[in-house]
Length: 267
View 1 (cartoon, rainbow, N blue to C red):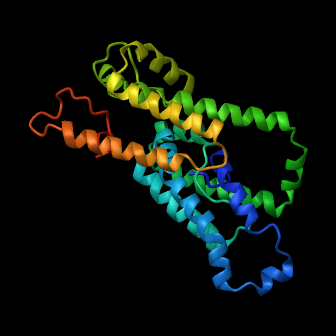
View 2: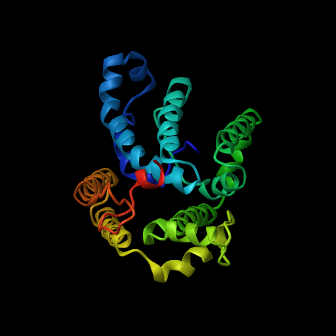
């Protein structure tokens, strides 16, 4: 999983920058360990809380499992913070490579993802050693904006199946050989998903729509806060309550209002 600053961390940039922007080199040298921990406690806790739902979602989007994403979110930033970085870095999961990772994990399995991370790290090290990073400053802003927009579209469209609750339906149709085939090609997978949208699952789509609108509205009209944390927490409560009330151990396949949970797809 790619570890870098991401748009999802914009709400935390202010806290991180405010903690260090007034410090001079002398101040940093004289700063005690206690002061360092106090200044970074709140930004660090915020980043950690955001990384939990974010790493899980991006791991699924990349073709891996939720627990793989959680482990990457712990060990990646942990090692990055111990071995390098700066006061202005926010280490955590990012979505820029989701489409590429999805393609390779679909072809070779999720086992390929760590190897891709190692090779990417070596390439980044080579760029740093040859001082090629200076050329990043001549990239037009329009290119960066287009790149960010394409990443958002890739991640959003890639989650159509989960949002509409048609993941298992598509898997069943593929297993029956009813003209559907498994594919890791992005545009083919998206087209396949939209063919099944009319058969959406209400119990999955309605919660998705409510939480999506709530999160978007909070970030739009009350910016500057990591709203993904409380929204994800409420989502966990909702899933837990629905599973507690409607789970039927005698017939797990029976229809209930409970949406599909992560434990159902990744036991």
